[in-house]
Length: 129
Image (cartoon, rainbow, N blue to C red; front, side, top):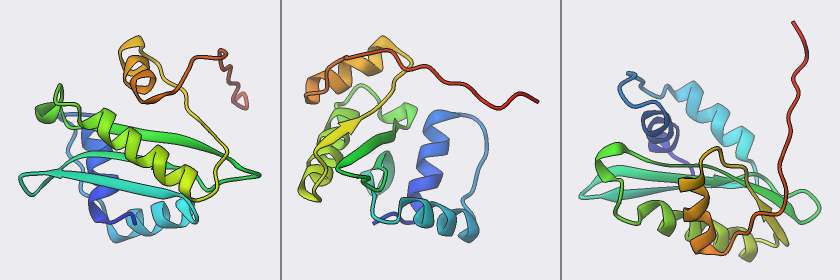
Protein backbone atom coordinates (compact mmCIF):
# COMPACT_ATOMS: atom_id res chain seq x y z
CA UNK A 1 0.00 0.00 0.00
CA UNK A 2 1.23 3.50 -0.78
CA UNK A 3 2.41 5.48 2.15
CA UNK A 4 3.94 8.88 2.77
CA UNK A 5 7.27 7.71 1.33
CA UNK A 6 5.88 6.72 -2.08
CA UNK A 7 5.16 10.18 -3.50
CA UNK A 8 8.14 11.74 -1.77
CA UNK A 9 10.60 9.10 -3.01
CA UNK A 10 9.25 9.24 -6.55
CA UNK A 11 9.57 13.01 -6.80
CA UNK A 12 13.04 13.00 -5.26
CA UNK A 13 14.20 10.30 -7.70
CA UNK A 14 12.77 11.93 -10.82
CA UNK A 15 13.84 15.45 -9.81
CA UNK A 16 16.99 15.15 -7.71
CA UNK A 17 17.96 18.36 -6.00
CA UNK A 18 14.46 19.81 -6.00
CA UNK A 19 13.21 20.01 -2.41
CA UNK A 20 9.87 18.32 -1.80
CA UNK A 21 7.98 17.08 1.23
CA UNK A 22 4.80 15.08 0.60
CA UNK A 23 1.81 16.60 2.34
CA UNK A 24 -1.03 14.51 3.71
CA UNK A 25 -3.11 15.90 0.82
CA UNK A 26 -0.54 14.64 -1.70
CA UNK A 27 -0.64 11.20 -0.12
CA UNK A 28 -4.46 11.16 -0.13
CA UNK A 29 -4.55 12.14 -3.81
CA UNK A 30 -2.02 9.43 -4.69
CA UNK A 31 -4.02 6.80 -2.84
CA UNK A 32 -7.25 7.89 -4.56
CA UNK A 33 -5.58 7.77 -7.99
CA UNK A 34 -4.27 4.27 -7.31
CA UNK A 35 -7.54 2.85 -5.94
CA UNK A 36 -7.06 -0.78 -6.96
CA UNK A 37 -3.53 -0.22 -8.23
CA UNK A 38 -0.42 -0.58 -6.14
CA UNK A 39 2.59 1.40 -4.99
CA UNK A 40 5.72 -0.23 -3.64
CA UNK A 41 8.52 1.55 -1.79
CA UNK A 42 11.82 -0.24 -1.29
CA UNK A 43 14.05 0.74 1.62
CA UNK A 44 17.82 0.46 1.90
CA UNK A 45 19.22 0.72 5.41
CA UNK A 46 15.90 2.09 6.65
CA UNK A 47 15.65 4.84 4.02
CA UNK A 48 13.24 4.90 1.07
CA UNK A 49 15.35 4.23 -2.03
CA UNK A 50 13.14 3.03 -4.89
CA UNK A 51 9.47 3.17 -5.82
CA UNK A 52 7.18 1.64 -8.44
CA UNK A 53 3.43 1.63 -9.12
CA UNK A 54 0.78 0.17 -11.36
CA UNK A 55 -2.54 1.77 -12.18
CA UNK A 56 -5.91 0.25 -11.34
CA UNK A 57 -6.60 -2.50 -13.90
CA UNK A 58 -9.18 -1.81 -16.57
CA UNK A 59 -10.46 -4.86 -18.45
CA UNK A 60 -7.29 -6.75 -17.48
CA UNK A 61 -4.90 -3.97 -18.55
CA UNK A 62 -2.76 -1.80 -16.27
CA UNK A 63 0.16 0.57 -16.64
CA UNK A 64 3.42 0.23 -14.77
CA UNK A 65 4.66 3.68 -13.87
CA UNK A 66 6.73 5.80 -11.62
CA UNK A 67 9.60 3.34 -11.22
CA UNK A 68 12.36 5.52 -9.82
CA UNK A 69 15.48 5.05 -7.74
CA UNK A 70 17.11 7.82 -5.75
CA UNK A 71 20.49 8.77 -7.23
CA UNK A 72 22.62 7.51 -4.35
CA UNK A 73 21.02 4.04 -4.60
CA UNK A 74 21.27 3.57 -8.38
CA UNK A 75 23.29 0.85 -10.14
CA UNK A 76 22.38 -1.75 -7.50
CA UNK A 77 19.53 -3.53 -9.31
CA UNK A 78 16.84 -1.92 -7.15
CA UNK A 79 14.82 -0.64 -10.12
CA UNK A 80 14.84 -4.10 -11.66
CA UNK A 81 13.80 -5.69 -8.36
CA UNK A 82 10.91 -3.28 -7.78
CA UNK A 83 9.77 -3.57 -11.39
CA UNK A 84 9.69 -7.35 -11.04
CA UNK A 85 7.81 -7.15 -7.73
CA UNK A 86 5.23 -4.69 -9.06
CA UNK A 87 4.69 -6.79 -12.21
CA UNK A 88 4.19 -9.95 -10.14
CA UNK A 89 1.71 -8.11 -7.92
CA UNK A 90 -0.20 -6.81 -10.96
CA UNK A 91 -0.54 -10.29 -12.47
CA UNK A 92 -1.51 -11.75 -9.10
CA UNK A 93 -4.33 -9.18 -8.97
CA UNK A 94 -5.74 -10.30 -12.33
CA UNK A 95 -3.88 -8.06 -14.79
CA UNK A 96 -3.43 -9.80 -18.15
CA UNK A 97 -1.43 -7.06 -19.90
CA UNK A 98 0.95 -4.68 -18.12
CA UNK A 99 2.40 -1.89 -20.24
CA UNK A 100 4.67 1.10 -19.74
CA UNK A 101 6.36 3.88 -21.63
CA UNK A 102 9.98 4.87 -21.20
CA UNK A 103 12.00 7.77 -22.51
CA UNK A 104 15.49 6.33 -22.35
CA UNK A 105 17.01 3.16 -23.77
CA UNK A 106 18.79 2.60 -20.44
CA UNK A 107 15.45 2.43 -18.62
CA UNK A 108 14.10 0.20 -21.38
CA UNK A 109 16.89 -2.31 -20.69
CA UNK A 110 15.81 -2.52 -17.05
CA UNK A 111 12.27 -3.37 -18.10
CA UNK A 112 13.47 -5.89 -20.68
CA UNK A 113 15.43 -7.77 -17.97
CA UNK A 114 12.13 -8.26 -16.15
CA UNK A 115 10.32 -9.53 -19.27
CA UNK A 116 8.85 -6.47 -21.00
CA UNK A 117 9.29 -6.24 -24.77
CA UNK A 118 9.18 -3.24 -27.09
CA UNK A 119 6.09 -3.50 -29.32
CA UNK A 120 5.30 -0.03 -30.58
CA UNK A 121 5.93 3.67 -30.23
CA UNK A 122 3.45 5.66 -28.24
CA UNK A 123 2.32 9.08 -29.37
CA UNK A 124 0.71 11.70 -27.18
CA UNK A 125 -1.27 14.86 -27.80
CA UNK A 126 -2.44 17.43 -25.33
CA UNK A 127 -5.22 19.95 -25.61
CA UNK A 128 -3.82 23.16 -27.21
CA UNK A 129 -3.67 26.30 -25.07
